[in-house]
Structures are given as C-alpha cells and as structure tokens.
Image 1: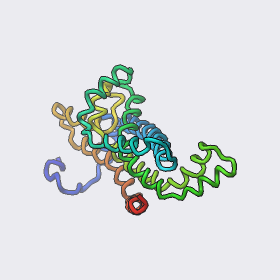
Image 2: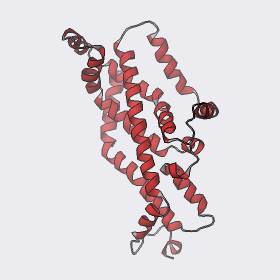
Image 3: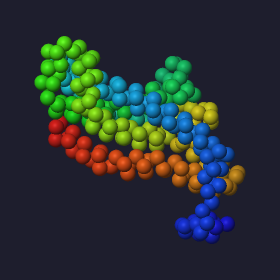
Image 4: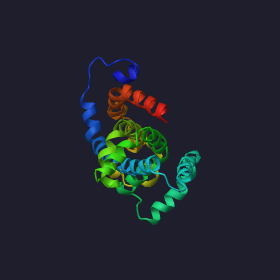
Length: 240
C-alpha cells in the first residue's frame, strides 16, 4: 500500500522481509551464486589469455607481429549482434548450450579485443631490461612472464578486470540466448524473468528489492576502484 501511495517516497518503515523473499522465494540467491561462478571463471580465463597474448605481442619481435595485433584490434569494429547467430551455432555444435561452462568461455572470449588494446599498450611501456636480466639469471620465458611480466602489469590487469566485472555482471543477451534452464540463470536474466512473471503476480515490492540487491555489487566495485581505474588508464595512455 505504501508503495502505491508514493513510489518515489522513502518508506516510513523498512520492510526487510521483502529482501529475504526476493533472495529466497524469487530465486535471487541461486542466480547470485550462478553469477559469481560465471564472473570468477570468465575473469580468470580472460586474464590468462589476454596477459599471455599481450606479453608476447609487447615483448617479442617476430614476423607478422603487427599484422596479428591489428587483426585482433580490427575485430573490435565488428558489431556483437553480427556474431550471435554464428556464436549460437558454434555453441550448439560444441555441446555448450545451457551450460555455465560454455557461458564462461563465451564471456572470457568476448572482452579479449578491448583488453588486448589496453594491456599491450601498458606492457610496451615496461623496460625490457628486466626481462633480459631474468634471462641472464637462467629464467625461462614462462618464469620471466610469471615473475616479471605479470607483477609489472598488475595495475593494468586490475583495471581491465574491473571493466570485465561490469560487462559480465550486466550481460543480458548472451545468457538469455544460451541458457534455457532457469536454475542456471545469472542475475540479469533472472531479474528479467521475474519482471515478466509479475504480469500474473503483482508483487512489485519484492521485485524492486531484487533490483536493489542486484545493484549493490556494482556500486561497491565502482566506489572502491573508481580513482584507481582513472589513474591507471592515464598511465596506460601515456605509456602507449
């Protein structure tokens, strides 16, 4: 009743049971844990692929290096909607439809291009003498990457992973297209599904409580890392 009397007014009495009902009865809790699994797996996968690729492009001189780099960057101009049909066919052929594992692979690959642009520029600005010193001490390429390349790129890796978090967390089209089981929905699709169900069950206060729960992680991440992101993006731009 209080909601319909003034939707934009602050409530006089906080109804915390709405958040409990959204978490348990509407399935926000299950979708939240699905989202954590997706984000964790996709961010680890993307970080591994991008850091290895960018380290190779930035620290080694070999034929076709620039061709490979611009081939990767050029694919950034292909609209994502143009790849959805082929992506769906590929996921079906690989047996990855309706699978969190398949969605993790899809998420992790979707941000490779943009992150390559940022991380390659950052790594090119790091002194190669540190790598050469590691080689002189007997370190292999892998050990040099792990103990020299990654620690130096830590600020930039944190920045791109904050971007990854925001993109993956708010991703809607891909999970809607690839996931059919409601038990595997991430938050973005679960909230949409609940809003559609409100056509027959007008429990709007519980739905809006779900909206609030969904906003909390992004607000926390943005508040904590806002200044850090701006600082490191400026460093990467100057070094690139």
